[in-house]
Image 1 (cartoon, rainbow, N blue to C red):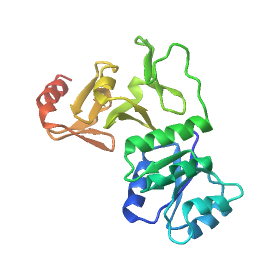
Image 2: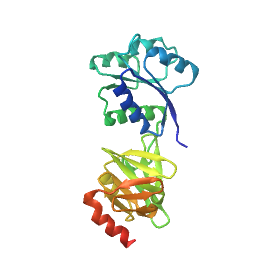
Image 3: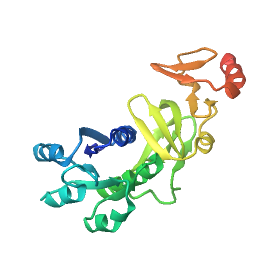
Length: 243
């Protein structure tokens, strides 16, 4: 079972707040339990329930993020966010996980969360394993590979994959009961998959054995609708009609 870490976001800028919420939502290991506009709103949240990770803006109205952190006798792990680079040295004296400068890209956010997950639950990769994924035996009875999900190496059975989604330098693997994210280019990841997976869009690869319906515009996999890219349409239609 995936370990879930309870998080609080303290951010007074609406756009930055929305972006951080979007980034946090990409990780099944993170549960955002509260979003606060300032330190005074965050204090009772931290006092009333266990919190594992605090995303804390430095420039807050009233009490600054750094001053707020210093008031906490037993603070959670902290990732600072700010528009100013000059606080970096001071922030690391407070032993924070990371220091993110706005605008915060998903790539940079991913690195910060990876560091947090590794520190909280360090995983030792199996011997002779590549950094991202390595194939298990790919016979008819053993059809899987191990994925480095940053927190651990997780075995993914190909036939249980619904589809794969590209997120720049990362891919999100959609399974029936969970989503797994790993660092990889979708073009390179697609090469590791069996022949019954097809690329249908620059951002999507689907498991044809999981398809429940399709049109000329999209593919249906249960409740999911995956768009078919214009440049992929003819090849996809030919492959699907062949069955």
